[in-house]
Image (cartoon, rainbow, N blue to C red; front, side, top):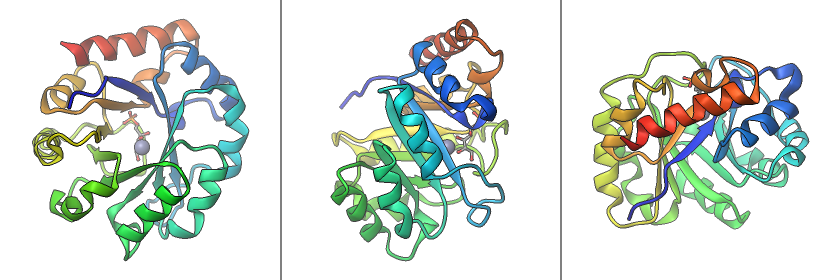
Length: 222
Ligand code: DX5
Ligand code: ZN
């Protein structure tokens, strides 16, 4: 199954003092999804923002809110993120003991269900939940910070994930170190959703964001 190429700017790299405007600007500049990196200072060693901030951003665009939860435990907060207006919620394999239950909870909240793998997390950890998910996120850096380097070995993991997905309508997303130089390897391997923070939010105008997004899109299409 071929799903469309989607560019998902991570607002982690945006100007936090003007978050609403940044979301509006990047959507206007051609973002397909808005990637929301939630960090708790426990699962990862950084703290970002939570459901109340996401709720305040919801009026700025109708674009799909792709929420990447880097928090543990995640279960107690899933409902709050759903109510805040996230369209998809992605949890890490290691976020709790009962991954299948977390995925069921996201489904029951009416949201797209995502699961994500750290660079060292084997693909085999999700083999038994493939029919319960809408999205696999392959981390191509260790989560916690923007601006890190793409780990080249993750292209092989994306390729293996693509094979595992088979004909299922599952989005295959890659996150970390995506630039016009690295996106091609991820696309060739089979990813269709590309998160990019620093590569998109360099510069500070809608026009620059538009150029950055279209450079990524054309490099992914090649
Ligand atoms: C890392 C986050 C990423 C990050 C990507 O923990 O999940 O979404 O913001 O940033 P860049 O594109 O700068 O690597
Ligand atoms: Zn992310």
